[in-house]
Image 1: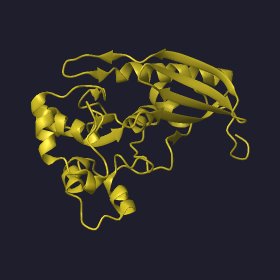
Image 2 (image 1 turned 30 degrees about the horizontal axis):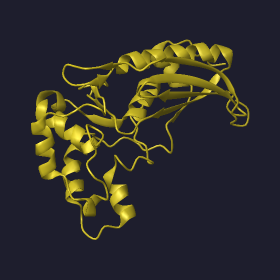
Image 3 (image 1 turned 180 degrees about the vertical axis):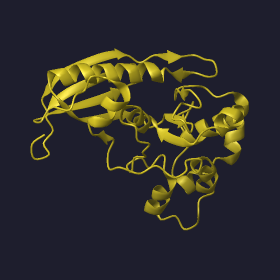
Length: 233
């Protein structure tokens, strides 16, 4: 890079139907792209995303595109209503739940009993597994042994960035995940019951991941971790 201007920017865009890696030059002109299907599994233990397949696709695509134009920056974009729950070794403790997974009746009923009213959080409980709180409640209640191994909870973009770059991070622009910034910004008059309940889940990350400004990675970690062929030129 010259004067901190990236030569190539690889955008990893993970969608519900398709996933792609798009290469841009310093002028943000598209140079090339790679695309694959986003595979969903019906179970067991619940409807989930084939995360490993996406990681392998992204690594391979970035390696290929780096040979077209050296990749200096990787940016990951993915739905926020999806979580990667990681153990101490960096492996998934539970499969990445599809946000369209339908919880069992007892999970939906149990979560309804602890979910706060709209006036407290300014957010309703969304259908299926779109609410991260309901996802976490489902995992903790139905799979306590697996959930007990969780040491870091990252949103989908940050989990993929971790797999590509090797750092466990949390995005400062993800208010749906980190409740304290949301509570502060809304200036609620009293502490939220939901924030207190969620802190039980969020504090499994010890220490809390650093909070970068964006899901942007430098080029070096992916080369060392994956052998993807991204050089240091």
